[in-house]
Image (cartoon, rainbow, N blue to C red; front, side, top):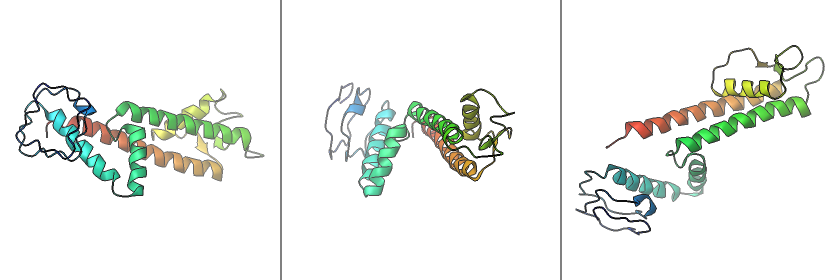
Length: 189
């Protein structure tokens, strides 16, 4: 199979013992579920090996039960199962915008009442001007865990949303580091 285009090929439960997979093209478009890749010299085909192992792991993962199917779906949509930094970055950016909208919406549709002008201290009267931008600023600072302290929640509702936001931020940035480590640290093993 050396220097072969395998797009659309089905290697389901096949034995590839002693096969040469060097310079294989379009291997990500083939079905490798259950393929026996023992005793193969993967010289020049480390990415093929990694892809086959990943596909079999993901197949096994999602076949366990309904919870794993749901987790797989979320994992696949948000980061292509940990393989797409751009998809995960987009997911994180959407989270930042979503929480900025939540903070803005809380002050717009659920004002805290007198004497407070905002659920967040230093936004609104006498604080950061600019409509939506201060909420976006606060969301970015919170999500990235910088936490300058210039804007802080001053109501219980603001604190609850902040706790959820920080939790998602920690998980999101931790997952980003995991994706980076997986991308760069597992070469050739």
